[in-house]
Length: 165
Image 1 (cartoon, one colour):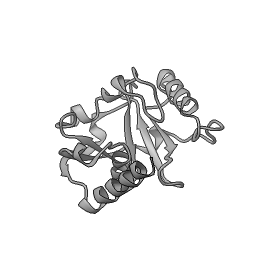
Image 2 (image 1 turned 45 degrees about the horizontal axis):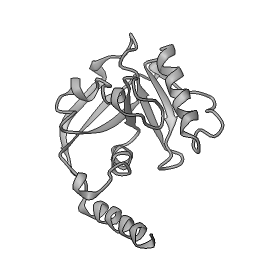
Image 3 (image 1 turned 90 degrees about the horizontal axis):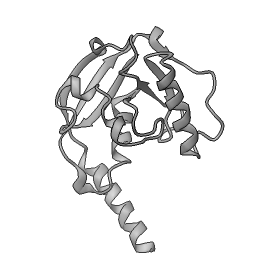
């Protein structure tokens, strides 16, 4: 399965940096708590971009980004039959699920749903799993810039929230 990742150039200048999982040590996200190395990838480059865009606090957060792709053998991707109840509405539930997967090291990759676009998927990678391979990374670093129209939409939405109080 081909997956995509976009990272801030400061932390993703090389393939080794981009796929180290070090970001997971410093910040929690949907599927893990801080302290766990993890790599978030998406099934498309556009979904990877949306995953970054929703986390930007303001348009001046835009900095240089790099995009990467990786080809993960299907046999290494765990595809759960179900996900915990309330994974979408309770961050603690999805984080617990992801942390358990990381710690168990049952597979180097797992397919998880994204909240941003229902019906689309992210693939989490565990860089500490013995079968994880940097050889899966096939492209990158490629400079990635966000279309200014996306940034202006985010800026207008923020302005509406501020004006409503």
